[in-house]
Length: 337
Image (cartoon, rainbow, N blue to C red):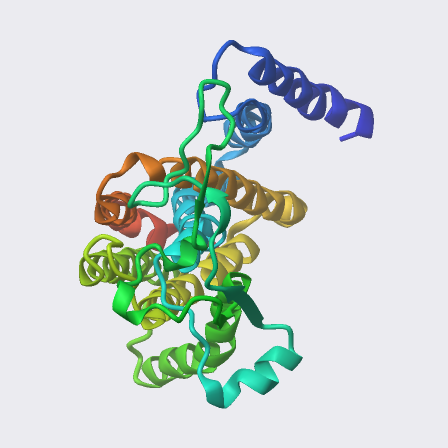
């Protein structure tokens, strides 16, 4: 296909429809930019559907299987990528981040330490759930108070007036998932190798199903964390957040590499690069939907309900995959050599 034809049937419609998403009144997905992105992705997704419609009999089933996996993967990334949104909010305001004295010096050298002083200053006015108050012009209302970090720390546990507290930087929690990837990848690979040696290794579609089920379990960890800290009235241990990252990383290792493997196995050779692009399209849509989900955070009075919604989405998607397993396994058996 020539570049001019690609531009005409894919890129140009994406730009036009994306612009329409930008200018429509109000917002469907929370902001003009998100509407524009989601709308702009629709013609590209439509192009992939047209590949299925125009494919021959031999290619149709593997392409259909891949598109089905791409579709459900959107939900996984919508949940997984909340490490940069809702879970960062949890780390910032709901998690005890005091750094142990034993590692303070090396942590400070590596720039991992946030220093705050227990003195009153101008800070945003928030309620018990750290929701920022705004005036009629949507400007943040300020008040004279101690730093927000101390808001849900009992008075008897707060430092003396003027003392400086050393905290682990909120941004550092973004490194927990990569840490778990390094630690858990050899273990997951060894586990599946052990099963393979006994002819019990699950198929690639089964691994994807397990990935979603384990992802659902990671949200249950945060539900328990919410109840353990009385819905944020007290700070929770950072162990909860680290554990949730650990569980969802196992889900990621079961799902993401397996889906990429399916692209290599099932794609018609002339479409392999294009279908790999389809996987990353689903990833990008999932990342954007993660922001849409996270924008609902303030709407939940009890934060456990936010994580229950994520659990329901992951479990429902796992059920959808379970219903497709027989079909997907048959496609892999026929075309995955």
